[in-house]
Image (cartoon, rainbow, N blue to C red; front, top):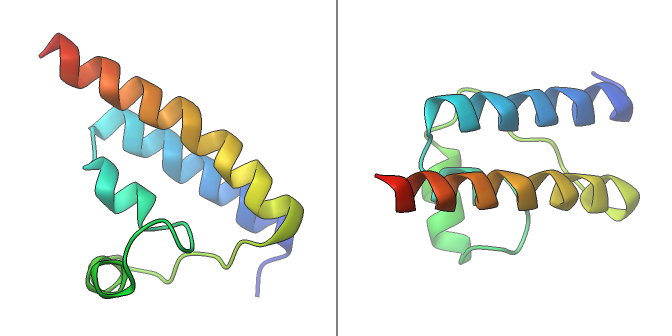
Length: 81
């Protein structure tokens, strides 16, 4: 099992990869707890090759701080298309 720090680093790397490949933002949002309806989140999680890390407390805050720039970039990219 990975340490929490390693999980967060991998999570941020995953977000960077999502930005560079223009992954559907709904899939990225689904990695975070309680941001999507449970049935949609479960459906999306079945499409991921690995289970996303469980984020809580300070780790969740760090994850959210990574999500904001991703969504900003994704929205700017969509507007430019």
